[in-house]
Image (cartoon, rainbow, N blue to C red; front, side, top):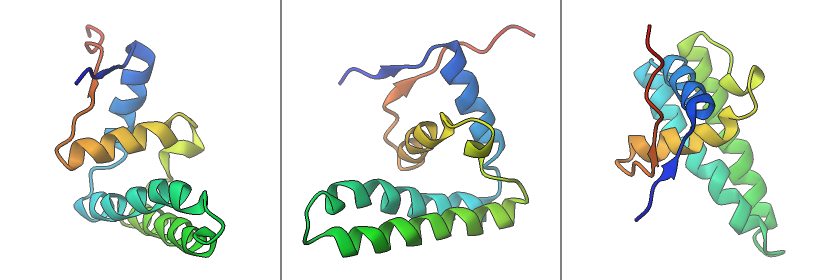
Length: 108
């Protein structure tokens, strides 16, 4: 399967995201919260699933904010909205599904 190629700017967002998510409790909360949030969209696309999707979305964000309380940092998306998408890639990688390739880190 072809992987998503992150350019230097998106790779930098991913690196900063990883720096903001070091605490294992925060990572555990995100590994629950992100799938709930992402899963709420297709579930909510049906009228019958809308109440369930609202609950999934709300509980998912609850896990996110609890995780950041453990981390002691504000959520990454506060400073860069691209982190909302990067978080999904980060979560997939945590589950062993690396669907992206990063650009090389800039030389120091």
